[in-house]
Amino acid sequence: MQREELITQRSLTQRTIISLVVFLLFIGGCIIGWKWLQSSPKDQGALQPLRNGLSRNESVFLSMFNMNKLTATYPVSMAAANVRVNGKYGIKSAFDSASWRLHIITSDTTELQLTLDDLKKLPKTEIVFDFKCIEGWSQVSHWGGVKFSDLINRYGLQKLMQRQFTGLETPDKEYYVGIDNKSMMHPQTLLAYELNGQPLPMNNGYPLRLIIPVKYGVKHLKRIGTIFFSDARPADFWYEQGYDYYCGL
Ligand SMILES: Nc1nc2c(c(=O)[nH]1)N[C@H]1C(S)=C(S)[C@@H](COP(=O)(O)O)O[C@H]1N2
Ligand SMILES: [Mo]
Image 1 (cartoon, protein in one colour):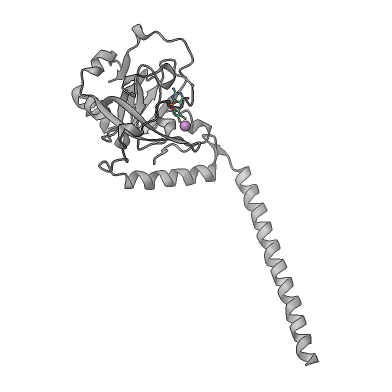
Image 2: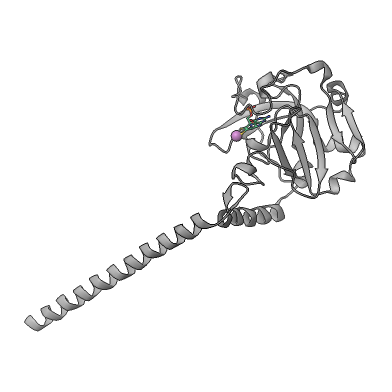
């Protein structure tokens, strides 16, 4: 009896020591891992190993992207009457609606310049969907405008869309996003000029904004000035601050 108790006592001590060593190794590993992460260079605002993770996610998401998979839509009656305003980069400066044009860069030396009336001549598409911001809120809202793919087809820009990305910028170039062209050609992607059946309010992107339900809110650029196409990733405001480039839903 006494002997057994002694053995148990000894193995207990051994186990305690082993647990302690494992625990210390684990903590040591965490500290080394954390230091390694902190000492790694930054890539577009994100530490390199984290950025690599984001890039891997992006290629997986892009390869799984289905053009025909539609984002859920809702009846108009469920749309918010007072749509939240979030993010005012590029829409703070004074705006002259008479001189506004949508500039679509078609080559190094040519561009299309479209007025709002030109866009309104194309078929109007409406959508009511759950608008999601990366900060954690979402809101069902009702938008109207022209399908981006309709615009591309109407103006014969299909060849430019074979490039990988579309870049969009506000007229003052203060806010800018880059988006993969599969997402741009998705049937629910709109250049919107209406919110709740009315012209866009100034703070929601008057006169024209992007509505792209397959992406988080950051990509829905308000007040589009210029659109261009490129195989290299266009500059992207929040990507430069360390966010994901793809921002897919
Ligand atoms: N020009 C411009 N567009 C922008 C932003 C911005 O700061 N400037 N913020 C984005 C973000 S983060 C979100 S969530 C949505 C918000 O759109 P809303 O203000 O119409 O709700 O706009 C996006 N488009
Ligand atoms: Mo957002």
